[in-house]
Amino acid sequence: MRSILLGGGLALIGTLLGTRWAIKVLVKNGYGQFIRDDGPTAHHTKRGTPTMGGIVIVGAVIFGYTLAHLITWSPPTASGLLVLYLVTGLGMVGFADDWTKISKARSLGLNSKAKLAGQTLVGVSFAILSFQFPDDQGVTPASQAISFLRDISWLNLPIWLAVIWIVLVIASWSNAANLTDGLDGLATGASAMVFAAYAAVNFWQNNQSCSTLSTSGPQCYWVRDPRDLALVSLALAGACFGFLWWNASPAKIFMGDTGSLAIGGGFAALSIFTRTELLMLIVAGLFLVITLSVVLQVGWFKATKGKRLFKMAPLQHHFELIGWAEITIVIRFWIFCGLCVAVGLGIFYAEWTVGQ
Image 1: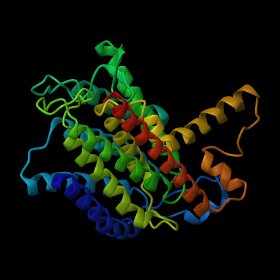
Image 2: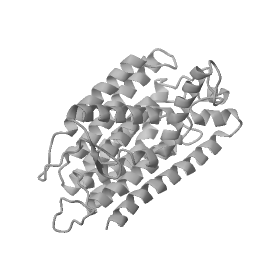
Image 3: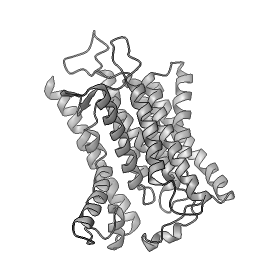
Image 4: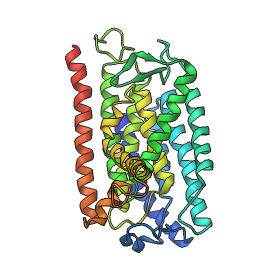
C-alpha cells in the first residue's frame, strides 16, 4: 500500500512542478498549438498555447513509479514495466505528431499512414511481450481470452488472433483519448477518474489474488502483479490530476497527442492486464460516447450524402456550437464520466459479491 500511495503522490508532484517549468521552456521556444480554421471560433483565442505537455505526464509517471520502488526497495514487475512501455511508446508516436505540427507550422501532424504505422509497431511489440514472463503459477501479463470482469472462457483466442485483438484495443483507446482531448481539462480530468478507478480495481484484485493460495476464495483473480498495476494506475491518476492544475480552463498548456495517445495506451494496457477489457467500455464510457459521435457523424454524412447528425463532431464541439459554455460542457462531461466510473466499479464489485 505504501508504494502505491508513493507512486501516485510523487507523480502528482512531478506534474504540478514539472508542468510549470515545461510551460516556460515551450513558450520561450515558441512551441504553441495551431488551431484549425474549421473548428469553433472560440478556439482561435487558444492559438499559441504551449502544447506537448504530455511529455510531463509520461515523465512524472515514470518518475513516480521508479522512485516508489527505490524508496520501498521493491523490484519492478513485468506487468508494470510493460504498461510503462506502452504509455511511453505511444507517447513518442504522439510527440512525433506534435513536433510535425510545430515544425511545419500547421494544425495537421503526421499523415494517417505514418501515425497508424507507429501505433501498430508499438502495439504489436507490446502484445507479443505481454504473452511472455509467466510467474510462478504460469500466469502471463496478458491472456489469450477476451475479458469482461475476468477472462471469458468461450472467447479464448489463438495466439495470432489474440495479438490482433490487443492491437485493436490499443488503437481504439489511444484514438478515443485523442478525440476526447478537445476542451480545456476535459480529457485530463476524465482520465484521472478512470485511472483512479483502475487503481481500486487492481488493489481489490491484489487482496483477492489466486496467487495467495492459502487465503484465496472461489472468486479470486488470476492476474499477474496486481499490486504493481495499482501503483502504475495511481501514478497515472496522480500525473493527470497534477497536470489538470495547469490544463484547466483557461489552459496554460495542452497535453497534445503526446499525452492523449499515452493516456489511451494506459487505458488499453490496464484493461488487458486486469482481464477487464469490456468493462473498460463502461468505466471509460465518456471516451466511448465521444468516439461513437465521430463514427455516427461520418456514417450519417456518407449515408445521407452530405447531411450531418451533429453540428460538429466530436460531441463536445456540438455542444459548443449550440451555445454551451466550454466550462459547462467540461463539468457536465466530468459528471457523466464519474457516473460511468461508479457504474463500472459497482458491476465489478457486484460480480465478486454474487459469486461468494
